[in-house]
Structure formats: C-alpha cells, structure tokens
Image (cartoon, rainbow, N blue to C red; front, top):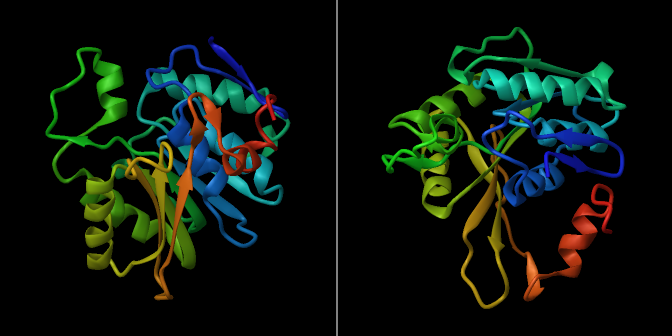
Length: 233
C-alpha cells in the first residue's frame, strides 16, 4: 500500500526506502515537550513523524531533514498536501551537514541503528537502516548544538544502541530524562527503547509499553496512544 491514510492527513510512501513502521509512529506519538515552538525531525523518511508532530503541536513549526533525495521529495509532497503545510519545511541534507541559527525545543529521530552490520543489498534501504562507526557520536553532538537549554530530544533505538547514545550524551552535556521500554507483549523482553535527553538533570522516569495483548491484537494502551491518528481506532 503506497498511500497510508491517517485521520487528518495521508502519507504517500512512493520512492521511500523505509516505509511507515511501528518505531516511527510510536516515537511521534510519545515524544513530548511542553508547548514547543520549533521542532526538528532528523531523518524524516516519508515525513510521517513530522506530520504527526504537526497534528499534536498546533503552534509549532516543524523542520525535517532527510539525506535521501527521493524520500525528501516524497516527504515534501506529503507536507504540501497536508492541512499543516504552512508549518512544515524540509531540507534534503545529511544531519552532519545541517546548520541553522534556530534552536529547537523538541528534536525527534528514528535514526538508522545497525552499526558494522552486513549492508542491505538495496543501497538506499541500507542508508536508511544502517549507521557507520561514529554515527551516534556525531548525532548526539549535533543534537546538543541544536537543542535549546530546556529542550528535549527523543530517539527510538534497540537496547544496545540506546545505551550507547546515553553514554555519548554525557560527553556533550546532556542527561537521560526518560526511558520507555517497548515490548511486543508482556511475555517478551523489551526490543526497543524510547529515550529522552536534555541539558537539565532531573529524576529519570522509566516505564514499559506493550504493543500486543494477543496474536495480532493490540493493547488498549497502544490504541489509546494512536487513536487520534489511525482510522481503525
């Protein structure tokens, strides 16, 4: 299905190596900050995260960056066809090359996470899913430069990479603020973590989130989280 219909917008996935997935919609629905005016979405892909954030934060302007030219063009079309088009912009650029006079109260990313792994034969999908050595150090450094003093950065990652990012964050003056363990169901260990980083040290909030209560049956908490977006709920 190339076009994914949400309650308030549609996402055409044509030309995008990475399609809409659970990681993306979870981070877009969970990432939080009080009344952000400027939001940055790093590696927007189809644009779905930026679009969901635009729906959630009606007073915010959202800028997205995307390294893949085709995906950036698709995301731009999705932005322009949405009811939030006047608050959404995109740059076809790698985050390491992105510079802006703006500082963002909220930064969100569903980054590539396979480091030193066998490259996917499909090169563009490989770029979307694989990270090179030093990638997370670069990403965290860039986030620290672009984040406001009281801002929050939210990322979704496998456990190992999330732990690495938390360590890297400490080198750049950022602390772990929140950690959400994502489980398939209550019988399984977490397979992802959503982490929030910021420059002000606070007590760390930690919680668990479960996707399924039975085979192909989503939990009530999953449905509540996404009820403002998914037509099924």
